[in-house]
Amino acid sequence: MQPSEALSTSAQVAVTLAGFAGVVVAFRSRAVHEWDKIDKFRLQILLTNSATPFALSLFAMVLLATTVDSVTIWRLCSIITFVVLVGVGASYGTTFRRFAPEEFRASGGKALIMRAGGLVAIAITLLQMYNVIRLQSFWPFFVAIATLLLFAMLQFILLVAAGHEPPNSS
View 1 (cartoon, rainbow, N blue to C red):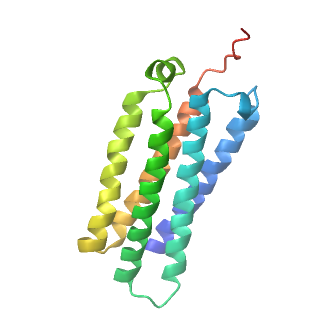
View 2 (tube, rainbow, N blue to C red; view 1 turned 135 degrees about the vertical axis):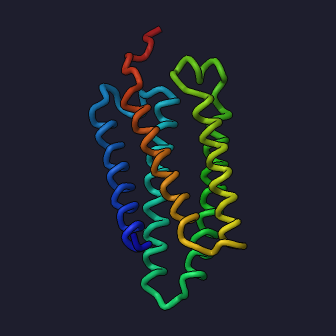
């Protein structure tokens, strides 16, 4: 598969996942502002991990439409991806640390999933720097996009599988 085809497909998947977020919101019995904090966090992750691969795919497709050589394109894409992933990871980490451990567990959050996802994200982020310095190829950049899409799908599954109990009226 050519990079342009892979990027086009990843952009389509990203838009589809973002659309699924709308379906989840529409079929919930409560408005988003009434959701548990963990479900709002999952929605944030789902939307961010859909929008980010979409934007990165479009950025790469624009560069592919230029006369810039492919080595430079993948280095630029990996630099941008590194910066974006660091920003997104910092945002997720800040939000995750705001949860008390008991609150996180009580609301159905899985710390193991968050920590494992964090470790994978760190590895993918470091892979982007390695791509800039040494590899200078498409596949590490695409691994970052695919990983973000997988994380978005995981959050979609967790949102759909989450209980829909009404909030306590006390």
